[in-house]
Image (cartoon, rainbow, N blue to C red):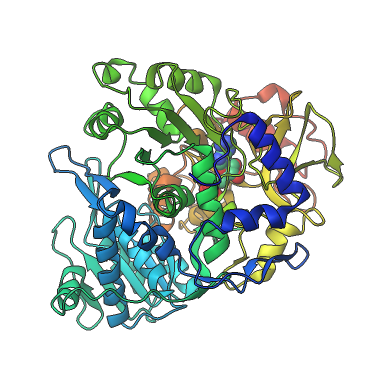
Length: 635
Ligand code: PRX
């Protein structure tokens, strides 16, 4: 593979070169892609506005890099292998030639339905190959996709549709997830009540359950495809995109109640997603890469779809959940398809650990070469279990750190090339200049220190803006520390210079690898009739990493009402989605507030963690007495 670093020495050289001459470094990597027109200038940037541009005036289409250019050599090789939720259903293999045809045909469907370059298209589907086809078809015609994770509620969809002003939706009748059948189209219908600007809904039939089709607005995927294929297979010309044209929007949670639409560009994202894929996993031609993330998150965008396909790889995609029909399902899939790389979340590992080793017995996992984790810190126990029972101490383990905003993995060991250390993401990839900052805004030098993690220099797949609100992007990421991108994470650098992510330092929770803003959960709780106020914090949870603990004050007239807890949970499910439901709810009479009215979350976190002895100074509180009441009522 081009631009693959092969030894620790080569890594050190590449890193040094990337810092000394970033433009020359990325020029060389970008030259391995297919461009319609080469760029005039590699980089222009300032973090003050912010304004970052890579490969300026370069022209390309990412789908030509993901598909077309592989056809001569890899046409008959599998691009996507899909394993259904049910074990009984036959798996599907889509070769690069077939993917080419499917993407072209569906791109024509999108055009026939009035979608043009720059239009925002919302994709709300289950984990089926058509989801990848839909994304690539959007990219082919230059439409900006916004994939929404299938666990989000109608109200979350409607917020995102309104924010992006997306007039087109691609969805399914329903989605299978383990024993559940999620009625996606019904959820979309509910979302559309408040989105009259939506013109078209294209519906793929997966579950064949009856759904409501609105005449003139809703069309079937299959019917639309028939109209195209009836005219013969005419590949459509991919739209010529500017390097800096937006490729997609992906909404993610921050400290405020409103999710932000992170915008990624066509060229920079493509170059970095591919570079990081090839290097972190040390991908070898012909290998099967099994990433268990949902495509609705950045991991799925970069390491199921774009990075893997751009590298000409084989992406193994699974519709269901790790424990269906039993806790051996991942291992069955690995054995069946001889997966070489398994990339999953610590939460999945912890939940499977709880079943012991019986589900692994008799499963041939000898094809595995690399094991990856992502999304949250991995505890040492889970790391060792993964290493011993899945990797049989024969696999490289990569702990990969990144964010929706970074587009690709920024900190990770490179499988078998650079050293690994349990619970450490270890070293930055070439091109990534890290800084740890202290509370006063000064960069901390030396080793064996902890601070807030920032990045000093742009990399190609840094977010370009937050959709419709550039100032918000500046305030969120570029205003805390001068001339730095602030990640929102705390981080430790050990004696050897290895990095260990310690978790968020802002009001963002990481529950089973899902990023959720405390303010979002609070807003949802507060919408329940009878709730006066609430405060949400995270606490350590054995399986989920973090659990959600909600302190709720009820209005006096509702204090004795039955079923408030259940109503609150229903409301959170309705407004955000089931994954954001609090694990614990404590009804309280008051919240610890400063005299200026700010909630002291530090105190609430300590109580939720059960660390009652270390609550600290409460004398500055408006009413220190509330703390004892809350401690007494801890659930
Ligand atoms: O706190 C970090 C955590 O997940 C956050 C990013 O969440 P999201 O944008 O949803 O992307 C998740 C998938 C990349 C980060 O700010 N995080 C991600 N990877 C790791 C991690 N924490 C510790 N170790 C990791 N490997």
